Length: 189
Image 1 (cartoon, rainbow, N blue to C red):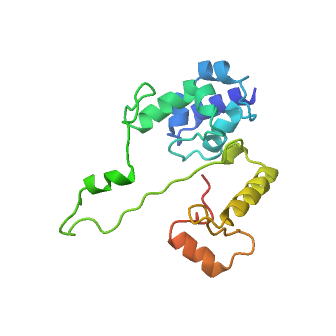
Image 2 (tube, one colour):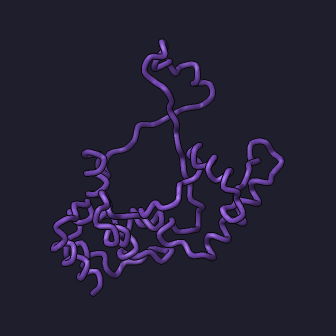
Image 3 (cartoon, rainbow, N blue to C red):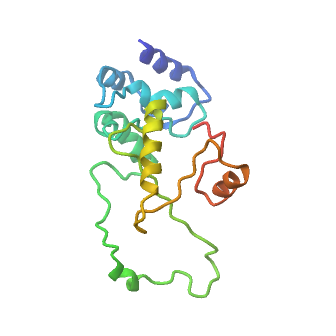
């Protein structure tokens, strides 16, 4: 019932232009409304951010990895449109970036005229836990315990520094934000 309310709510929301609004139909709701992933995610979890933030460009979040498969009728057209036609039937090219391939990489700006900086950012979720939209306080605590434990390994390949949000100094927080390792507060999406 709540899902149908959101469908009609979107129909009336003239200032909303999200991909969720464009691709959420009554047929999609009817097809997906009773589905639940192994970790308990529902269609409502998928669309909750887009409903709460009508100015969102996309409007959906995957609550867990299984959501991409279970809620495929909604995710696939949104992902395809967002990525300019790269559909679910297409695959990324095979990649072999072993250390023996480094010499094959060419300098994209050999004269240093155009590229000031670049970065690659990766994020990972822990297997067996939902993604952020469905994480509980208990999930966060368990994950924090696991990550802080793993950062303490003496093996240089695994060793790291764990920065807990609680108790972090403002200077450390600012530096981590400036270095793009920590999201700044206030990101409502």
